[in-house]
Length: 204
Image (cartoon, rainbow, N blue to C red; front, side, top):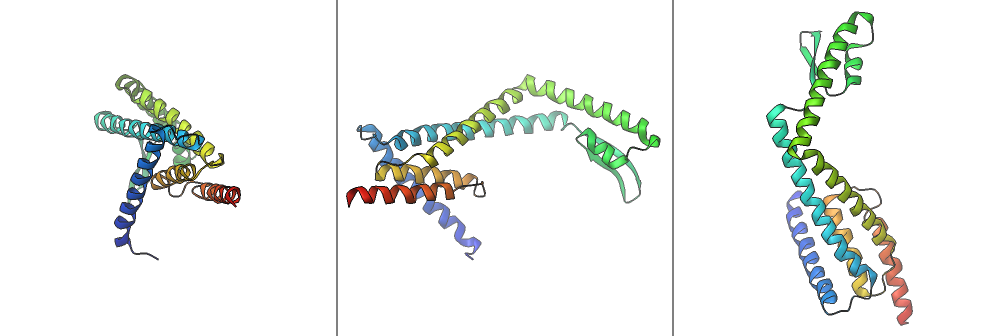
């Protein structure tokens, strides 16, 4: 297994490869040699992926600021355990799981659920006011677009070697963010194998 000390070098190599691929694909677009649909798809992917990352950072920033101002919506559940005087609940079901459903805890559970609902209502109102709700919605929409482009890229046959490079560039950039995502990069690798086999067969 490679040592962790090698990781920065591998990351630099990937970024160098992505930069070289971007130069080649951008040149294909600028001089009109972009008949391969995967090159145009790469351009769309690159813009959409960058937008998704910007929106993610913006939503995270707004969430941190709001949490620092009013705290996340939650309540503390008092416990009878001296070693653990309380537990935290962020969901009404957690209150029932911790306290049970015995009649003796009914009054406490109702109060805690009211307090939690009030905290959640305040969070929702503040989130809408500072733009967090809108940012999260825009991020989710961009993520859906990214996922759609990924699936399209993995299934679209390349018509040229630059098209194969475009497909690999998309897979490489995505795998840096989501190395354990289901299907990636194997869907792309299978697609690239099929592309290279078909292109080679045409030239034979």
